[in-house]
Image (cartoon, rainbow, N blue to C red; front, side, top):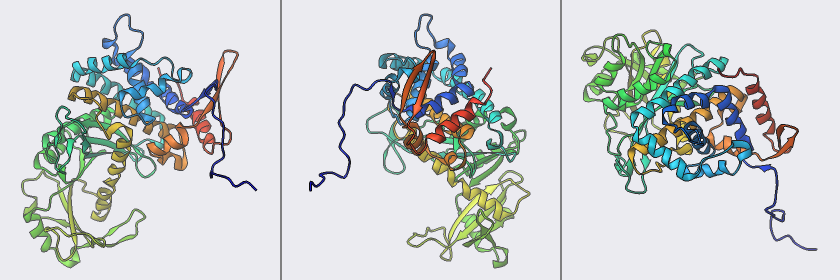
Length: 458
């Protein structure tokens, strides 16, 4: 009896296959572009940058780059994966044309960036109107998470510098709209900063918040229905005062540094004033309590601010800080929400940890590396990354159901986008025949049917 020499079946490979399409599941992203009108909006925004006899529309080039990034690319040259499938993606510009467009947009500075951002904001309003019960503001409030991220530079790029973690690169400040436990999130701002930019620079937080608010539908750009979440890097007098400014009236929940004053007031809290913290299911959180600080500790802060502290037994192996007390890990945050219990407010602030999931998804979608040398070029790259992340958030929100709506980019690529198909031409129609044995084929076809039922833009 002949023994096998491998655990896998042996197949013969030939490079003469015809009418076979790889990355066929990307048709989900293409249909999302069509139904949201993203291509039309960006085309109108970038019309001033299209030359009279240009073959390739600048918007098509930008969207091709965003699609390549959404499919796993991490540099401009990865648009080649689209160029190899003209039946699915149409004509794709050559690498020199792509590079020249990036240089042109970079040379335009904030003008080109603002044009792209305006188009994204316009389309976002349409997407939210199509999303129905899955819209991020389904409960009447929009939550925007601000957080910093370190991007390592492997070469001497413009504005790269030593970071606070003793690495080398850049320190962008990001903002994401949280879709809640039933979804993911979408980017609304990325502010590129040098690696040595301060974590608690109020001016940068204000700029990022302004960019984020400009991406929201107009009715959510001011008022209590918009909640700004941030860690202790945003706990500065200037940023909190900006959020609470008369006429802006934004809701906020901002982490605070445990100062000596806060620490001394916390030690005076009587045992009866501590309230057990809660979990998302309403059950008591084991080993965690919250309390509210009042009195002169609030002096100098905007009117209506509430200062809430939490103490919690640290997990095994955790190292306590100098501001911790009685063997408990102490944290603090400020909010201006007046009509909710402190345990509920603490849970809301703790759930901003979902921002780390958004950053992980962004790292897997072009943010792990800034591929270009000049800062102006990398700002354009970050807009491309945001368009890719928008598509990866909008497609599940509009077309997927159940657990599939929670898929992060890597899982979307492995299960949906990587599906192969056979392209069949019959009459004047072209049909993609997905593999019947692929476990997630029905997810793709059902999602395409849902997108087909949506009204066309315009």
